[in-house]
Length: 313
Image 1 (cartoon, helix red, strand yellow):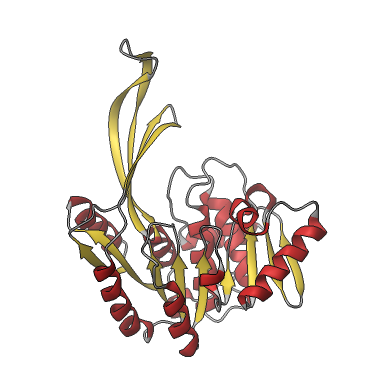
Image 2 (cartoon, one colour):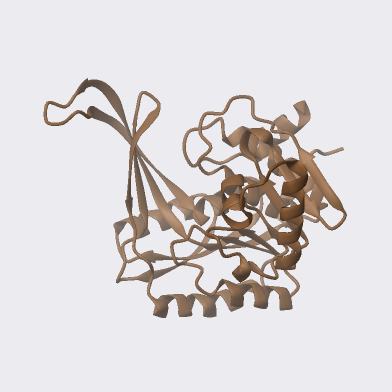
């Protein structure tokens, strides 16, 4: 039996906030004489797609046919982001907004530790977002699964309308949420918060039973088929009408959890788009998360390494 189905049958549309992740790697050997901060002598740099773009590249790395819809600035970072995602076989529909810079997150790394992160970001204009909705309608017909990756940067202002259109078209809708107002995600098929995001919405829980009650109440309130709660080193829990399914974490060694949620929703979407059952999709997504947290920064899991990890499982 094949451990992974043919994910090339999956057609995904990923919509959300994109960003360019820049990494400056260097050596730290002294403290600055100007202020009590380390001096980093930069030796190499890297650039990677982040946010919804990282979701798209993760899905493509697993074999899914993926289209990315988002907004970038009319600048060097936006052009670079397009270049990077297209190089990874993602079909990019990146609308330009000349009034904003492309969101950039610059991380300074010394001795394999993140010393500093600098963010450059501005919310996109309503005119560009309105155009995005027009493009969304035309792209929706060509996908089986819609992934809405919300990083709270303003790119999903029309998310309620997108969910409404996708539901009417009979699409599977996955949402990686942000903030404390989940009402705008009403009608999604599956919502995938992490523990911190969940706590922001339902409050602190006393025990596992209390958490289950709050999670199921939220799922029913949203009209969702399932709620997938990712719990880092504690694995993940899937809440459905039929009950709760828990998966223990698969991580061999946790190096960096940034971008792990992107990998989870990408693997989940690719599996569901290929026709897999939700429980099987969750198992594969959990295994993919266990691989990606062993890598530095926003990274991808290749189909071959996921297949190998599933074989060892």
